[in-house]
Length: 515
Ligand code: SF4
Image (tube, rainbow, N blue to C red; front, side, top):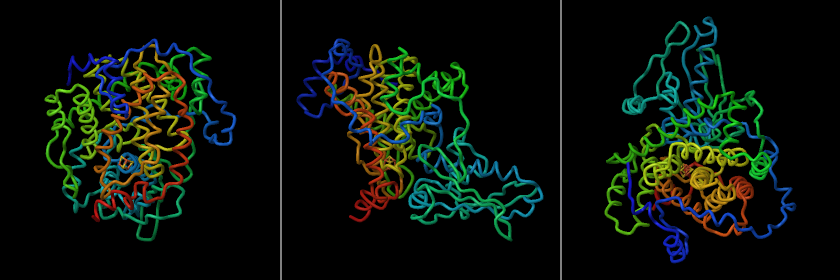
């Protein structure tokens, strides 16, 4: 828990001086800037957008029906694509196995799992095999204790007995095979799970880890859901709905969640509180962590060290930035430990939003309701990125993970402004995303450590900076809309070589190891 009155008292003049001096616009301000008069200015005329009609993605014409709790998932790190989704696939496969009749199951001899794409290239470093084994053994992502996964890792040769129908079969890590990187399945991260008899295959399922812990499978169809109360597929449509219905952004997201999932408002708020609590816990635990992270890199944990040293830094802005970095690194280090985190939107980026949430709560003393509403604003931004581009490093590179996390965090900060000006929310999200465009995913050794952990700190600092620029600049000066930046992100991800999409075949993953 942190508090510093001097940081909360930083004023606008000080920030603007600092921004002008650095030229980068980075300023540490411990309080949300209160600048209501700026919003009242008339924006300059905006260029007509008709010309880019052909660039509008087909997805933008389809309303978003994702649930808040599909975006924010509690589960074990270090990668939502590589741990949470594979564990969920294993859960689904075991449910299918357990629904088979006893006569068929009597012939069962073994389970075989084959991993393709970046699950094959970096799954070992991410602990995909342990997540799948835990899922087969009945563990669920939200409740799997870190100690359970730790015990699997510490005893790699153990053979477990698995109850299938009326018999037991053996299962161990050796039955999880890291197969080909290049393949012809429709999604990069593919998992084939088979139940085998001595004569052949009794059951086979083909799963896809599509980013952010989401899974689909061959023959998957969109589950039946309610119609959103306020249907939108891009930011332009969202803003029109807000304006036309005179409704706030967090209320619109709440009403849509109720309509799509049939969940009551009380339950949504309690689940949001759980998400916020889990985010806070990941930072708190991370700040206590010491020693070296698992894996061959030998990377020292540094969140606690940075946080302690921040107290001695005299310059307010520097102290603020070191603290914010420490909070984000704390969440990211918990993720690297394989401990419980919240995807926001992914596990690799699980330090960014928790770092901002922690700072808002303990530095800025934001109320629980402000945090809930901010999280709902961040949700809207994450939905749009997932719906129209990607939140998977394996699909879009790191721009889809840290980039999207930073844009969500910037939106959350901006939503704390009086009156929740949507112009500021959109600009903050767009600025944060714009300056992550083209960022590759190149985890060294396949471990979500370098560059991922510090990248969470950079994402949180950029989010804060984007929020400040959007808040202070003259309305209308920002010309890059969130829709444009998301279309650009999608196209850039498509153009990106697979070397830079979570395969550890390029970038730091190559140069750091070979030099
Ligand atoms: S480099 Fe970025 S996208 Fe890749 S694993 Fe790390 S955080 Fe995720």
